Length: 134
Ligand SMILES: Nc1ccn([C@H]2C[C@H](O)[C@@H](COP(=O)(O)OP(=O)(O)OP(=O)(O)O)O2)c(=O)n1
Image (cartoon, rainbow, N blue to C red; front, top):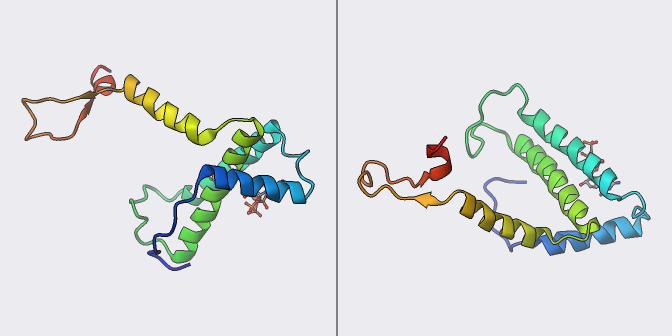
C-alpha cells in the first residue's frame, strides 16, 4: 500500500463485529472464540505489536524514515489487536463503541479542564487538574 493514503469511508465497530462474527461462523470457529481464548489471542497480538517497536528507541510521530513495508506491518498488527478486541467485546455481549464513548465522558469528569486565565498567553495549553495536584 502507498503512503499517504486517500481518506475513505468511516468504518464502524459494529461493521467489524459483524464481519468477524461471520468470518468465525463460516469456519466453524465459534466454539473456540470464547472470551478467555480471545483475550489470550489479543495479548499475543499485543506482543507482536510490541516487537515492532522493540529496541528501536523513541519513534517520531508519523513514523518518519519508516518504509512502506514497515508501516504496513504495523497496520497489520494494530488491526489484529483491534479485531480480537472487537470480537472479545462482541462475544461478551457488550457494545464496545458505546462503552468507549461512555468511558471518555467518565475520563473527562475525572480530569476536568482547568484554564489558567493569568497565564493564558504564555501557556495556552489546558492544564489537567489531576496532573497539577500530583
Ligand atoms: N482462531 C482465530 C485465528 C485467527 N483469527 C484472525 C484474527 C486475527 O486478525 C488474525 C490472526 O491470525 P494469526 O493467528 O495467523 O496471526 P498473524 O496474522 O499475526 O500471523 P503470524 O502470527 O504468523 O504473524 O486472524 C481469528 O479471528 N480467529
